[in-house]
Amino acid sequence: MNIQTRAVLWTVPETRGNPTTASVFAVMAFAVGLLAMSTLNARASVYPGTVSIWATMGEFSPTLVRIITGKPYPSATSSLNAGSPASYNPPPPSSDESEGKLSPIYTWTWQVNYKSSEGASYASAPSADYAVNAIPASSLPGATLVFVPKVPAYWQVQVTCYVTVTDQNDTSKTWNGHSNANNGPRTLTSYTFDITYTGSVAGGTSDSGSVVSNQTINVHAGWPIKLGAKITPSDLATQFTWMISGAGGNGAGAIGGYTPIAGATSVTPLAASNATTDVFPGSATPSGAYYYTTNNKFAASVAPTNNTEIPYVMTTFDVAKAMATLSTKTSVVCGGDDSTLGNGAIDMGDAFLTALDPSSPNPQTKIGITFNSSPGGNSSFSGSFNFVQLYTSDDNYYDSSGKLLASNTQTGLDNTFPYGNQAPVGANQADTTNDNPARGPVSGVAKITVADTPIMWLMYKPAAAGSIWVPIDSVNWNWGGTDYYDGNTGTGWNTTGTTQSNNPPGMITNTYPVWSTVVKNTK
Image (cartoon, rainbow, N blue to C red; front, side):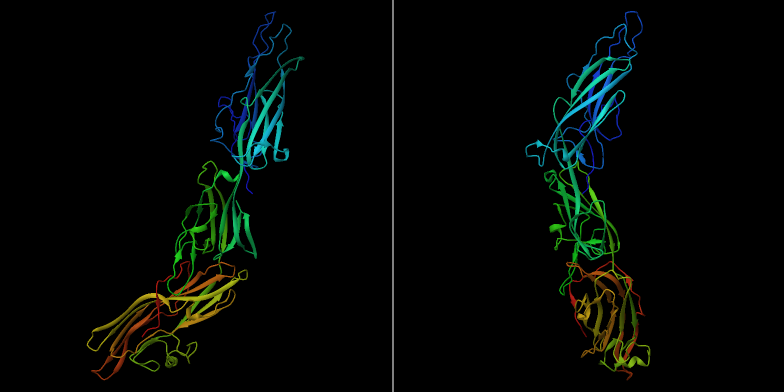
């Protein structure tokens, strides 16, 4: 619970300054006027003039409770005149008047009522729910009475100050007076306002609506994050504005969701500023949660939309993300009289390439590119890794006269999610997969050109319920070339202009694979 003092109802008039170290005060003024009169033997008056005695009511502990002012509450900057009597004139001094050393004694009385909502009726507040502290002063101009609400509520406080001023040189001479705070009870509102969190916490625990204001919460990328605004009294605010650092769309540190399906997949963006109810993100996202996608620290704050007198509160999420490196092993592009696919085909990798590439990871199987993942530092993580690939093809087919017969130009999911319908592995396990792209042979085609640029992702999904996949590493790779039939020279099928990536490295990424179509195996 986050309870702090913000302001109090009454303030010292500017001409008097601030009589205590607290920020804003409730002030009751009682002036004792000591007449400046000559004695019978013409001795100068021992009194310097009117003496003002100030009884102040202010904050005692600024961290205990917040107090708001303003409609329908009095202004925090308004001054308060003393009640009747506004000033008190002591009897005129006599010929044997003292040297005027005065000693005040203050006595306070109070009546405290409160209610839980603005529409309720006031009732007497038990002493356990508030504190009143009288701080005596040994000399003029005054003493301080401190009222400290201990619970959030609507308060009604009536305070009366009684003062007795005694001449220290002649204790038989006293002057008495008293003052009410503005001749009637005054009202103030104390409240609590906090952020709550529902979700997992690093270390295997979880929170369900726990107050996390001004705290740092350790979470994992991909976990569902649900926040709430908790304000008491509850009728102080009903609409709230949330601010989420790092929020955005694909590639941002915080997103609204990601659900990969075969047909089409996109990232649900999360707006950095969201006006909603006391639940966030609520209906703003499909799951009612949002997600961090990268290791960093992010702030989340909330402020009432319909009560600007209450300041925002915030919390910090320290996000950890599973780690792994992605490496590759590539083969070469071949074509012509392909021993596997047949004449008029072009592919990346083939069994007969053993002689050209003895270090091929499995020379008995056609392998164009192999992807290997190696996890690191994931002992505190529970989840699984898997692969997904987006494939961009740029393939063209021609007849013997050079006429373009067909083009295959598209970008989309490479067949399935996950890639190859491969089973996931644990957060601390290595994994591998491969791709063996090929085009042709096609009947009636005399030339094929290929310039394909796939991207392979390594993804991770935490085991916590409701988690989403987060991107870890990605590899951009390519392959291509031209396979054509030369009937004039008798050389048959030939391959030229071949290109392919050479063991491209994986790169850390926060960008998700998204697609609107599926690229099926094609010739």
